[in-house]
Each structure stands twice: as C-alpha cells, then as structure tokens.
Image (cartoon, rainbow, N blue to C red; front, top):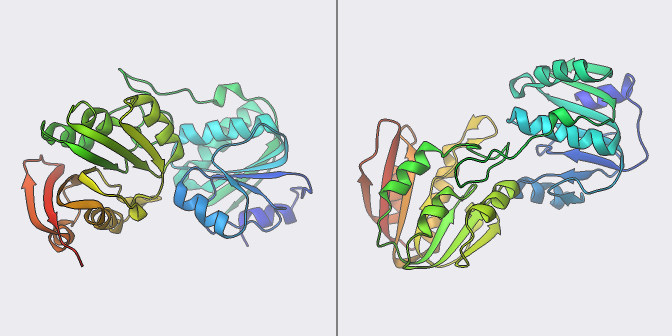
Length: 316
C-alpha cells in the first residue's frame, strides 16, 4: 500500500473538495484523491497525466483547494517553495517523498514552523500533513546572477553549467542561418548563439516550463522563438543544432536520453547542416553519432567533457 493510501486509512481525512497534486511522477498513487488537478511543468510528464484523463496545469492557479499534495522534487529549494505555495491556498497540505529527495529535512523544517498533524514512514520515504497557513520563509526567490535570470528547480540554477560554457566557447563565429537549441534550459547557450548576426532564426526547445520562462527573460532578441516541447519529438528544419543533452531520468543515469537527442538532431538538420554537442566524458555517444552522421569530429574538450561536431546527416 502506498503512503498516501495508508495515510487516508490511518487519520488523514478524505476530501470531496478541490484537490491539487503538485509535481507527481508518472505512476503516483492517486487512490483517495477526487479528480485532482495535476500541477506538472515537465512537458512529457504533463502529457502523460493528461493522456490518463486528468486536468493539468504547469503552476497552481489562483484559487482555493481543500487538499494539496506536494511531491518532493530533486531541488530542496523548489520543494520548499511548492510547500509554501500549497500551504497558502489549501486547507490541508500533504508532503510526500523519498529519503533521497530530502523528505526528512523538509519534515524537520516544517515541525519547527507549524503543527504537523500526522506522518507515515514507509518504503524509504515519508509522508506528513498539516493545516494550510502562510509560510513566507519557505518561498524561493529568483537565483539571478550577472545578466541572467534563473530560479530554483531548473537545471544549473544560479550558475552557468560548465559543459554549456565549454560548448559556447567552441561554437564558430560564422554560425549562421536557422539554428535550434535543443534542450535549451534557461537560455545560456542561446544567449551566446544569438550574438551571431548571421543567425536568422533561433528556436529554443525546452521541456521544463519554468526553465523556458527564464530563457524568455534571458534571450530577448526577436529572432528567438520559444517552444515548451519534448526535444526528442521535435520536428523542424535547421542549418545547425546546438545541444547539451540531459542524461538523467529522475536520479537515475539514462544515456538513452542523449541518444534520442542525437536522433532528433539528425531528423531536424538540412543535408549540409551541422550539430554541435557537449557530453560528459563517460557517456557513450560516439556510436550513435556515427550511425546518424557521415562526418563526426571530436573537438578539443577537457577532462570532464567532450565536444562533437557532426555533419552530413544520414537519412534512413
């Protein structure tokens, strides 16, 4: 039995009023929740819940809920902010997560601020609940630095990812035409790409809605267009693709993500197009690159990251 179902059986009151479920993974047990509104900013997860028949949004709407359930994310600050948002608009707030996601730390913090009404520990995780209230000390602030805007929960919040910085330095000054930033994040690479006057169009494709919101603030050039979409499914025609693919699904390493990005880049490139890519040195992308492109060059990288320039996409 999942922790939420166990909580309903041991003291947590069921609600017939509006319910919000914040950042749930696919497969989260919704038994006992009456038609929850799913809050999920990741495009693939949002679509997965929508395809199961649930109403979905990317952020909490400005209305009251009888119950809000917060699922811990990998970001401690983001989870704390979600808890504060839920507490401000719900009568009862439930927080659920694994020990590896820092649930015990959130539990200790909340116990110092409010009266926790109940808790369940099971399967290397914890669930607890409390009455909604204002928790301003938990609200996150934008993690801005230099000319850039980022926020908690997005990849590389508050700093430039070193792999992206390395790739940006390797991009040719003559980069031109229609360019795709695949998995654009909060827009650092695009901010460098758009400095090239010969770039006629720049499409930023990003799965995280909040990262894309940051990118819109970091790249204001009218040549840029922003797309909340799964990079693996993107279709378009470009002269160049620039990418720093993710390689984690949750906390688990997943090199298939990078391979899917490479396949997408091949699909999107014109016959004379080029992809510029950075990857952690241990990731085995060479075979996929050679399967997808007739010409693959490894550019000078460093001890942590390797750089590739691949051209002449092979058509099936």
